[in-house]
Image (cartoon, rainbow, N blue to C red; front, side, top):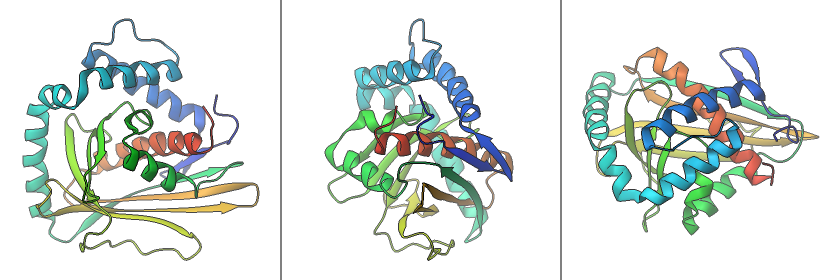
Length: 244
């Protein structure tokens, strides 16, 4: 289902083929299917996506937040402690995606259009670990997800117009930039940032994805989150190009 764009990921200096990322997604999907009570989850990853999106939409925001309330409270306290311990220091989580067809530059527009229109299915489908992605009237985006290898779901507020600091410089060779500041609460301290960069090339594309975590976040969680990034952005790039 994914051969059309020939996407591969560079994770920790290794070229990871699309099928390995899909295998990671399938393992995470099995965990989340069990958590959400999806009966007899399918073995095919595309069918798993469909089943999980259906279940999350059936449950709705309030039920999902009640189900995750304890995890969200614990992760909020953990985020506050890690942010305080880190100060202005960051730990980078970087993944590069390349493809042999289609456009990566179209992906941020696809995501923003889904946010603005409330197309939750398109946002949830990119990763089994997505639970809520929505945009408020002021443009601040709220995301509830399980990041990388964390045992807890967390809530993050992303604001593209925030005056916080992004340490990663823009690469002028990437014409499309997606930059935002992350906070654990709408008015809380800056807990991180992102700079995702996209470039279409003759016969393909490249995307450089960067999350800036507080420096005190354990390195193993940062490494695990690289697979989360590879999963969600490969899926979103495919969706933006009508693949899948």
